[in-house]
Figure 1 (cartoon, rainbow, N blue to C red):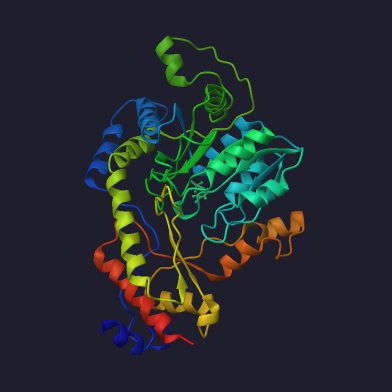
Figure 2 (tube, rainbow, N blue to C red):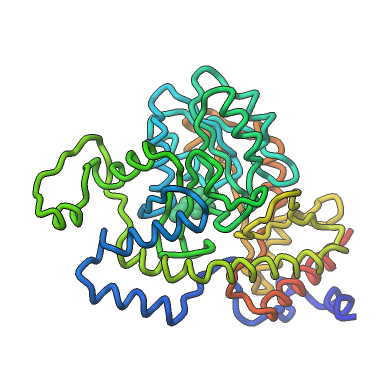
Length: 403
Ligand SMILES: *Cc1c(COP(=O)(O)O)cnc(C)c1O
């Protein structure tokens, strides 16, 4: 009944009353009193950066994902740069990644002077398509960078098999996928290196921050030096040992994550499982509410996968609607639903077009998905009433524009 009533209501975009009065963002952090206290405690300690909280956070994180090593970085982008460096990517090398990602995934290849090669995505998950990857492997290929789009793990068995056959390194961009499971294992333990981000819209935040996990001691050591100017020991180690001497052995950066940030990360990590459960609840709620809506395609979940639901991306079906994605997007925004679009395919950004000559049409699955995608609000702090508002707004807008 409610549904029928809503579809006859005037859209907020046409001067009607919006579904809610305040904008619901597509993602946001939750910071509780424990988080605040743990940060304040660090502010009263001796170490604001590279202190005991860094090691504690890294050890807890490594244990959580099931990896031997976890190395923190000042952002997910810095962590990707570190992984590209540890791989040994250099000018003349190629690395294959998805066009349907945040630009940083491809940019980290450029930081090393190597060439990003895009391969198209699978139509269901919008993750890198292994067949498309296989066709783009050349004698210059050194690495594969699959992205766990929206928090749904990429086809890692296929990626690792290709890597094995061709001697490649797999860097999994799991910035969407902290806490996701692939074949009963947590993301972070499968690839040669796995990269996470702690930006406020992600499942766990440190403000800015990132992490690389790996089982390989040589990668861990390269990552450790790379984030600290290429220096072989850190300041705290030297103080503890009463030493002043250190060596810079490679050209690194200051990509360290502070003790303050790591204290927040540790506190957030304790709540991660509960937050993931809440995201799964919201996703299940959306999926059951929308299953009768033939005008939109819902996110797919493959067998043996448990997504972490960073995003809940729907695709509008243009053949069933009077208007395109742009109009639907604007109408939802007018209803005060803070929808977003993930992503403008990387190769279509002016920088990539100008530098590599992309013109559009190269990656039809990614490009057609881009034309249809809308990310609905998805974050663990959402209330049931927030989720109901999203459902009401989608029904109202889609109902209005039915063919
Ligand atoms: C968030 C994100 C990054 C970058 O992380 P920052 O911490 O913002 O630097 C990289 N790749 C993907 C897919 C992301 O979503």
